[in-house]
Image (tube, rainbow, N blue to C red; front, side, top):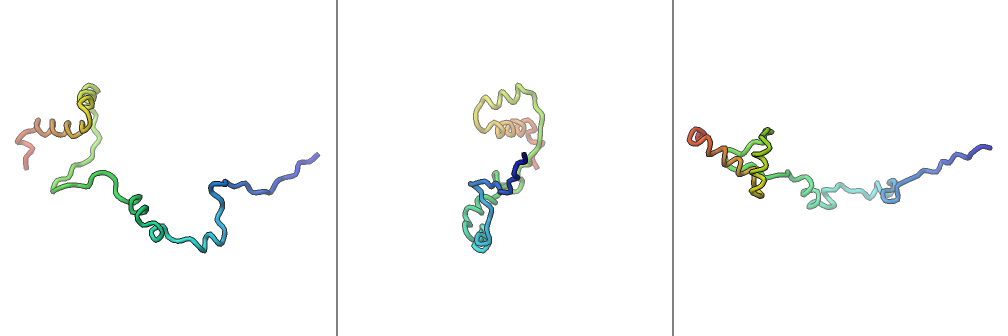
Length: 94
């Protein structure tokens, strides 16, 4: 007894393969939905502000320091920055 091999192509019903007609109708996404594309391509995060924008770094701190600042609520990274700025005092001014 031999099994018949199925040559039937299985496709995802939610994402069918494109036909020649689909390709003919296709348009660049920027032309069809420019606002959606613009929102997708927009740079994430806060834009650099002023003459001295902040620099992203990786810093290892004691867990108790992180717990303390996180315990003070949102904006804890800014409070760490403010604390470090006060710690260097006038030495940090340019």
